[in-house]
Amino acid sequence: MSLSAFAINCTLKASPGESSCERLLAETLAELERYGVTGEQLRAADYNIKPGVTSDEGEGDDWPAIRQKILDADIFILGSPVWLGHPSSICQRVLERLDAFLGETDDEGRLVSYGRVAGVAVVGNEDGAHHIIAELFQGLNDVGFTIPASACTYWVGEAMQPTDFKDLSQTPEMIQKATAGLARNCVHLANLLKQTPYPAQNTG
Image 1 (cartoon, rainbow, N blue to C red):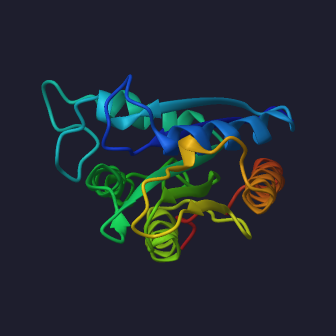
Image 2 (cartoon, rainbow, N blue to C red):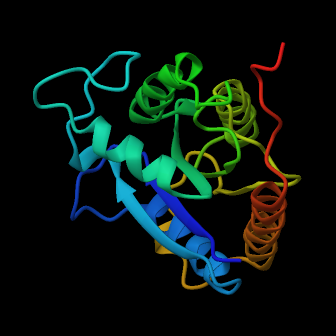
């Protein structure tokens, strides 16, 4: 069964700045590709994602096109760096724009995001990865995504040190295993949801 994936990199750096989050998301998409999943990564900082909680905030808003890429994919991966123990401000804005899904349904009353699975990737050289994963999991689930088991991968370097994930000569084995598990479980659940969609929500 053909599947596709779409990843958003919520680094604060616009292209072509180096991004640890980009590297981890690229590794995640590479793992998904092993299962025949076609993938694309987008850097949110390169676009004008206006503040708001609707799917279209008017002239100049780049979100509608990004939103369509999310809905066109079977697997959505949200990646964020750690800043002061929290997800980036851009990541929070992405979640706020996804909030519009709560008021958007298909012909059978299901949120438009139903049937899509989501995973999370987090990188940083300070504490906060587990906290961020928990926040993003809850937010993604709230707006209709399905979260597989162990659908996260993260790297946290030694606190208060300058080394970033992008600087490593090789990805640590445990991170590779986590990324592989994320990909494997996302593909498994996405295939199940394609075969057996969520039931209609407007049947009374």
